[in-house]
Picture 1 (tube, one colour):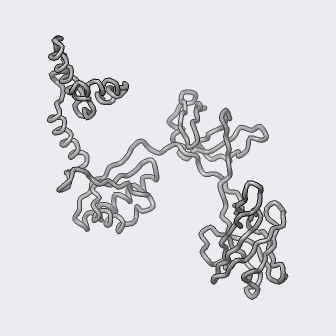
Picture 2 (cartoon, one colour; picture 1 turned 45 degrees about the vertical axis):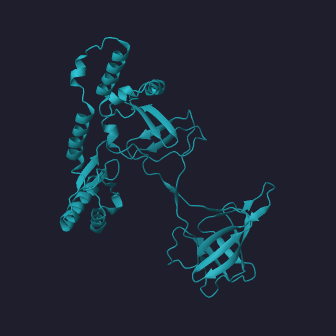
Picture 3 (tube, rainbow, N blue to C red; picture 1 turned 135 degrees about the vertical axis):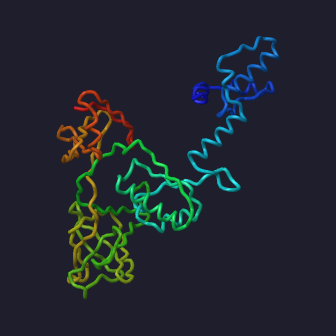
Length: 339
């Protein structure tokens, strides 16, 4: 607290003056602020002949040696004993998706982890318990001790699950300032529905015997109803490399066919759905609900946007009319009153 109080003021000019006078600039006084101040005041009083006033707090100020000893004691109480050869400890924040992976914890322990941090702003009690259980098992198996620390402020206020809308794959060639294509847009797709595409579209043919070939041009109407041409640049197993000279918006169910082989045709599948957009501008109002609600994604009709909250329990603790929400989100801040 002493250091925070000291740093509320801009001390740069004072620190430069103290350093020019050959005195401590208070630059490393974090652990013993009052003692450092009193010592500087004492030296200045002796140099100028001014009386060195006695303060009640002066007798209780920690000096540098005592402060370092206290720091060592508190550090060991919180973080455990320091490893041989260094004073730093290794703390690892455990990701929720690895909570059940005992081998993961063994690797961390053998790599030098001494503290496992559970971020209680994420996941939930079941996952936290699984983390602790697997860490304890890994610690017993390796013979390496590990402390557990947990952040306890609770879950952050987040937007709840939003409804999904059909996904769109946008291909956009690079153009110069005059609009001339400098580089075609490229896209990797698969023609086999069983192939794991990792979000890449599937160009499923109607007949496995009529597959696209290198150099072939595939025609289709994109999401806007515009005719577009995609050139097959290469075929590698179940993978096709396509290029486009114009902007294309691809959606699931869009039919395609070969320009020179009418029987080579099919449709697009495999484009993942996306969460609906809810766009808010400065001054817009919206309802944040503590229970399930169908979000209102658009303000075009004058309706106030409505979004769900990921932690409804937060609202149960806030009496109507008394709570003011002031939360910094990704792109700014939002405030409001519970009703």
